[in-house]
Image 1 (spheres, one colour):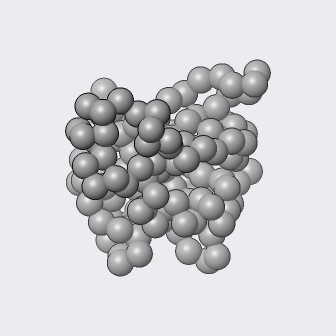
Image 2 (image 1 turned 135 degrees about the horizontal axis):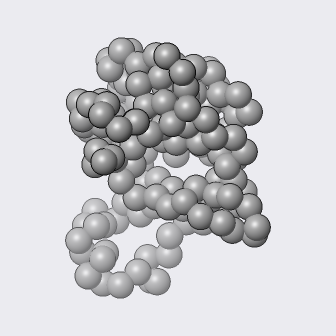
Length: 154
Protein backbone atom coordinates (compact mmCIF):
# COMPACT_ATOMS: atom_id res chain seq x y z
CA UNK A 1 0.00 0.00 0.00
CA UNK A 2 1.30 3.44 -0.93
CA UNK A 3 1.73 6.08 1.76
CA UNK A 4 -0.30 9.24 1.41
CA UNK A 5 1.66 10.79 -1.42
CA UNK A 6 4.61 10.08 -3.65
CA UNK A 7 7.36 12.41 -4.84
CA UNK A 8 7.78 14.46 -7.98
CA UNK A 9 11.37 15.56 -8.61
CA UNK A 10 12.74 18.24 -10.91
CA UNK A 11 16.03 19.87 -11.76
CA UNK A 12 16.96 23.08 -13.57
CA UNK A 13 19.74 25.65 -13.55
CA UNK A 14 21.94 23.47 -11.32
CA UNK A 15 19.24 23.08 -8.68
CA UNK A 16 17.08 20.08 -7.71
CA UNK A 17 13.79 19.94 -5.85
CA UNK A 18 11.31 17.29 -4.85
CA UNK A 19 7.77 17.67 -3.57
CA UNK A 20 5.08 15.40 -2.23
CA UNK A 21 2.13 14.91 -4.54
CA UNK A 22 -1.22 13.47 -3.64
CA UNK A 23 -2.98 14.31 -6.91
CA UNK A 24 -1.90 12.72 -10.14
CA UNK A 25 -2.95 10.14 -12.66
CA UNK A 26 -1.42 7.52 -14.86
CA UNK A 27 -2.95 6.91 -18.26
CA UNK A 28 -2.77 7.29 -22.00
CA UNK A 29 -3.16 10.51 -23.99
CA UNK A 30 -2.52 10.87 -27.71
CA UNK A 31 -1.58 7.16 -27.81
CA UNK A 32 1.29 7.83 -25.39
CA UNK A 33 1.78 6.62 -21.81
CA UNK A 34 1.50 9.65 -19.53
CA UNK A 35 1.54 10.80 -15.93
CA UNK A 36 -0.51 13.92 -15.22
CA UNK A 37 0.38 15.98 -12.19
CA UNK A 38 -0.97 19.19 -10.69
CA UNK A 39 1.53 21.71 -9.30
CA UNK A 40 0.43 24.84 -7.48
CA UNK A 41 1.58 28.15 -8.92
CA UNK A 42 3.30 29.04 -5.63
CA UNK A 43 5.54 25.96 -5.54
CA UNK A 44 9.27 26.17 -6.17
CA UNK A 45 8.92 22.98 -8.21
CA UNK A 46 6.79 24.95 -10.71
CA UNK A 47 9.68 27.36 -11.27
CA UNK A 48 12.02 24.47 -12.02
CA UNK A 49 9.62 22.51 -14.22
CA UNK A 50 8.98 25.65 -16.25
CA UNK A 51 12.75 26.04 -16.79
CA UNK A 52 13.23 22.33 -17.59
CA UNK A 53 9.99 20.58 -18.62
CA UNK A 54 11.09 17.16 -17.37
CA UNK A 55 10.34 15.40 -14.10
CA UNK A 56 10.46 12.08 -12.33
CA UNK A 57 7.78 10.38 -10.28
CA UNK A 58 9.32 8.54 -7.33
CA UNK A 59 7.31 5.74 -5.70
CA UNK A 60 8.28 3.58 -2.70
CA UNK A 61 8.10 -0.19 -2.92
CA UNK A 62 5.89 -2.24 -0.62
CA UNK A 63 7.21 -2.36 2.91
CA UNK A 64 9.28 0.83 2.70
CA UNK A 65 8.55 3.30 5.48
CA UNK A 66 8.87 6.69 3.82
CA UNK A 67 6.27 8.56 5.89
CA UNK A 68 8.87 10.98 7.29
CA UNK A 69 10.22 11.70 3.81
CA UNK A 70 6.73 12.25 2.39
CA UNK A 71 5.81 14.50 5.33
CA UNK A 72 9.03 16.56 5.20
CA UNK A 73 8.93 17.06 1.44
CA UNK A 74 5.26 18.02 1.64
CA UNK A 75 5.71 20.69 4.30
CA UNK A 76 8.96 22.43 3.28
CA UNK A 77 9.83 24.60 0.31
CA UNK A 78 12.83 23.92 -1.88
CA UNK A 79 13.34 27.70 -1.93
CA UNK A 80 14.35 27.53 1.73
CA UNK A 81 15.92 24.11 2.22
CA UNK A 82 17.62 21.23 0.45
CA UNK A 83 15.09 18.45 0.96
CA UNK A 84 17.46 15.84 -0.50
CA UNK A 85 20.09 16.63 2.16
CA UNK A 86 17.54 17.09 4.94
CA UNK A 87 16.05 13.63 4.30
CA UNK A 88 19.41 12.01 3.44
CA UNK A 89 18.03 10.96 0.06
CA UNK A 90 20.34 9.18 -2.36
CA UNK A 91 20.02 10.86 -5.75
CA UNK A 92 20.51 8.91 -8.96
CA UNK A 93 20.69 10.83 -12.26
CA UNK A 94 17.78 10.24 -14.60
CA UNK A 95 18.55 8.00 -17.56
CA UNK A 96 16.52 9.87 -20.21
CA UNK A 97 15.58 13.10 -18.42
CA UNK A 98 17.53 15.77 -16.58
CA UNK A 99 15.70 15.16 -13.31
CA UNK A 100 16.75 12.95 -10.40
CA UNK A 101 15.59 9.51 -9.36
CA UNK A 102 15.64 8.69 -5.63
CA UNK A 103 16.99 5.40 -4.27
CA UNK A 104 14.63 5.41 -1.25
CA UNK A 105 11.61 5.60 -3.60
CA UNK A 106 12.97 3.32 -6.31
CA UNK A 107 10.03 2.89 -8.69
CA UNK A 108 10.79 5.70 -11.13
CA UNK A 109 8.83 7.16 -14.02
CA UNK A 110 10.80 9.59 -16.18
CA UNK A 111 8.54 12.12 -17.88
CA UNK A 112 8.82 14.89 -20.47
CA UNK A 113 6.08 17.50 -20.48
CA UNK A 114 4.01 17.35 -23.66
CA UNK A 115 1.16 19.59 -22.49
CA UNK A 116 0.45 22.06 -19.72
CA UNK A 117 -2.53 24.14 -18.77
CA UNK A 118 -3.25 26.64 -16.03
CA UNK A 119 -6.47 25.99 -14.16
CA UNK A 120 -9.38 28.25 -15.04
CA UNK A 121 -10.95 29.48 -11.80
CA UNK A 122 -14.26 30.07 -13.57
CA UNK A 123 -14.43 26.41 -14.66
CA UNK A 124 -14.02 24.99 -11.12
CA UNK A 125 -17.11 24.26 -9.04
CA UNK A 126 -17.60 26.65 -6.13
CA UNK A 127 -17.45 23.94 -3.43
CA UNK A 128 -14.09 22.74 -4.81
CA UNK A 129 -12.74 26.30 -4.88
CA UNK A 130 -13.76 26.78 -1.25
CA UNK A 131 -12.36 23.47 -0.02
CA UNK A 132 -9.13 23.25 -2.04
CA UNK A 133 -8.30 26.83 -3.06
CA UNK A 134 -9.31 29.15 -0.20
CA UNK A 135 -6.32 31.41 -0.92
CA UNK A 136 -6.65 31.23 -4.73
CA UNK A 137 -3.40 29.28 -5.23
CA UNK A 138 -4.49 27.32 -8.31
CA UNK A 139 -2.59 24.55 -10.08
CA UNK A 140 -0.96 24.06 -13.42
CA UNK A 141 -1.65 20.65 -14.92
CA UNK A 142 1.37 19.03 -16.55
CA UNK A 143 0.98 15.99 -18.77
CA UNK A 144 4.30 14.21 -18.94
CA UNK A 145 4.97 11.52 -21.50
CA UNK A 146 6.56 8.58 -19.70
CA UNK A 147 9.80 8.04 -21.60
CA UNK A 148 11.34 5.56 -19.17
CA UNK A 149 10.27 3.45 -16.19
CA UNK A 150 12.39 1.33 -13.88
CA UNK A 151 13.09 0.20 -10.35
CA UNK A 152 16.43 1.27 -8.93
CA UNK A 153 18.42 -1.65 -7.57
CA UNK A 154 20.20 -1.35 -4.22
